[in-house]
Amino acid sequence: MIEIKKMFLEGAELDFLLEIVGRSVIMFILILVILRLSGKKGVRQLTLFEVAIILSLGSAAGDPMFQEELPIIYALVVLFSVIVIYKFVTWLSSKSTLINKILEGEAMVVVRDGMFDLKHEHDGDFSKMEFFSELRNQSVEHLGQVRMAVLEIDGSMSILFYPDAEVKYGLPLFPDDYKRIISNQDGVPVACMYCGQISPHIPINQSCPRCQRENWAFAIDTKRV
Ligand SMILES: [Zn+2]
Image (cartoon, rainbow, N blue to C red; front, side, top):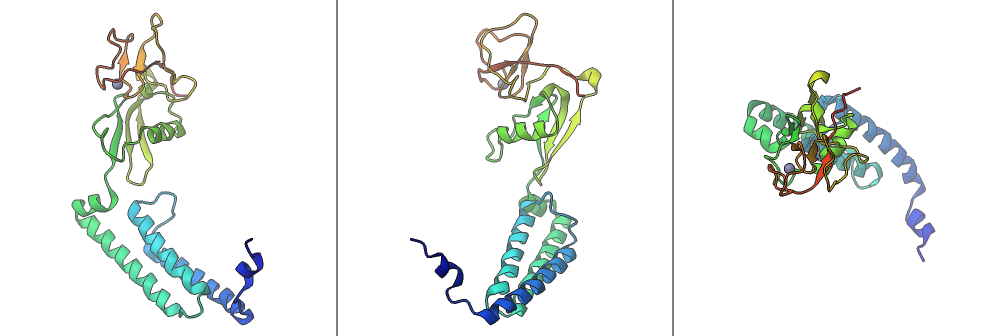
């Protein structure tokens, strides 16, 4: 049996509860000041480096809120040190593309000319499922609409579209159309379900000339709305 009362109350001192409120207010204000000093505008998209900074800030800010033996000055020193490191490393990486690459990674071409780019296929960070959902989020119905899509270092996707007149047949990305087919249907091109290669019909030997995989779906050429 878990003892709820023991978990919540054992060892708690009434005076310290009030102090915790005061400590929390102070730490909260401090962390706001520190985040303003960092110069970031918001946190919608963070690079890995920034996530590391936020984690260290969070831990340093949280502990003194409720640990009696921790004077707030310790946390203050940690917060300022982390911000100084952040500023210094940001400055360094603005001076050197190599350091920037090591810290933040590189933008990666995901779609080129209406097909998945296969150059990074064997990299650890190449996740097709993630690309599918990111492209769908941006209302891309099929790859034939996309001239180029780039995965940015903060995880967002930048997309250049073909104008309506140049939209071609492409691999559908939504589940209703992304279905494996076995036989051709007259006049409908097919798309390789792995790389997006388009073929006027399923090749005789069944496998994709570009990636050698064997699953095909009917291609579509709907315009963007
Ligand atoms: Zn293929």
